[in-house]
Image (cartoon, rainbow, N blue to C red):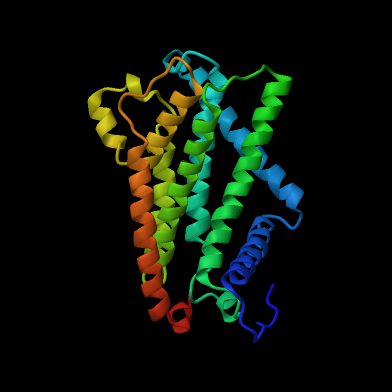
Length: 275
């Protein structure tokens, strides 16, 4: 990965292939961070997903909230919220925790922050897609067949939940060298608040207007509700839209790129001394 750069000039296609190759190797490195064995790391992620689905299923049963769910497969309703929530929050955590401009990894000539950010985001997406696919396949094969009304739209919203999380994480990553402890606290608080503010525990169409106003700032809130509209035939979201998370994603992407460029030009290795 870190071989000496060749002196000869390469064309645009060669440069693009070289960049993709470095992103691939950095992504593999990020995937293997959680565990030395990639398969064990994936199984741990699957176990975390199943555990969270089980916790929310039991909580719905104990609190008698099942009657408030969307008419259809109840466990699929629970999984739809959990999958979107994990994908979004894992992307925020992975990208905000990626190597920044002051990281020792940046001493290697082929490495840069763009590769670091892309690798963190893609490794998070890879693990969540595989985990969701395994859980859905096992449920479909071993418990009961599932039917998704609009699979293509569901997958698109799933990617939007990931993309919005990755771009929010990019803004946090760019701000981290200026205020490390504060940014880490903000990232943690945002991920914890999403346990409630994501809307995975309730049906938005059944909420009073005053409660919707508390959560509609959150792009994940819109993604989960819109995804349920794509998954269930008899549910049509009335208070959320896809345009809002798209706009938030684009704005955070532009802001993150500008902040990252500014931080990279002014970063100093001495910022991390003693931390």
